[in-house]
Length: 116
Image (tube, rainbow, N blue to C red; front, side, top):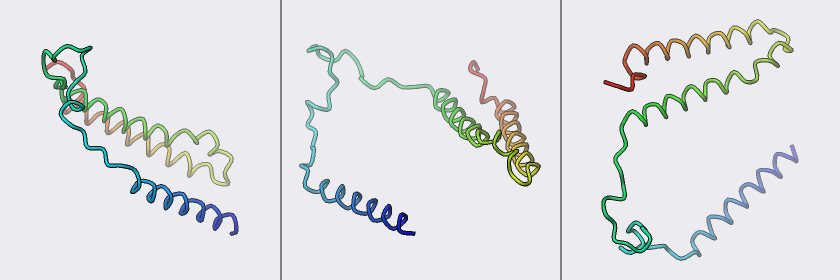
């Protein structure tokens, strides 16, 4: 119990210290020169912000979702050391079925097809 209170106190003290220091730091107000893109001294030839295809964002979000769900399965090899390993494997199978159903749904909706 002492360890929990100590860690909680240190966390709150550090958070308070960082909040107080952030008020003392000067406000950064970027001007037009700082907001302009840097191109080795030349005037910018075009827009510095290129448009991205929405497909890139969809693939990135799908990757993050599936990667997070796979991370849930990483402790699975240690699950057989519990008193009831069948429960662990039941939930792992449930997660895998949900992953598969999500993949099938994205596939049928055309979310994985790059060319239209």
